[in-house]
Amino acid sequence: MKRSTEVEGDGIPLAVVSAPANRHDSPLLRPTCEAAAAQVGPMPDDPTMHLDRAYDNNPTRDLLDELGLHGEIARKGVPAPIQVGKRWVVERTNSWMNGYGKIRRCTDRDAKIVDFYLYLAAALVTVRQLIRRARTLYRWDTRPTTRRLK
Image 1 (spheres, rainbow, N blue to C red):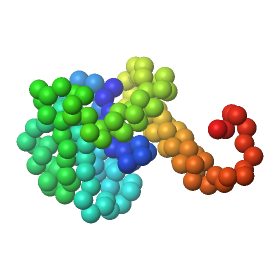
Image 2: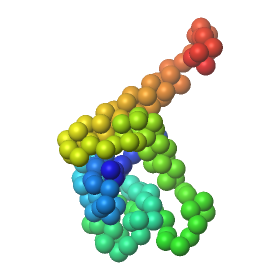
Image 3: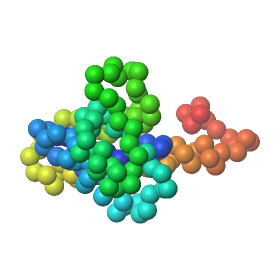
Image 4: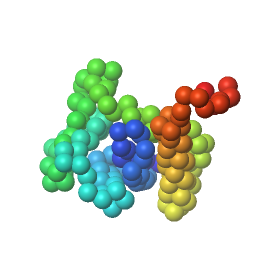
């Protein structure tokens, strides 16, 4: 299973799109961006997409220009650690989603079942991120804590 994920700056998934594993990544960019726009609404003034080297081609750049997005695309032929940039947020979210075994070992052929597990993993990642954000945002100094919650 191949998936295309669009996340916000903290790693909360905005949109996920799945496809068979034998497809190239770049045709999934338009449905992913359209799904994110449908979920979130209008994007900020100058949004930046951090894409891996599979998207390093002219049709992808044309699509980003058409959608009004700025793309930081990893170059083919350059070693990955040098050009990581802020792509690590997306990779971390993908790793979190892979933590749910059904996503990591997806052998289902029915697209509805694959999408269900993908959306369930995205929802669980979102809830965990929001709980973590609320825990740090709404904590007060004299709040009694246990070792488990530190």
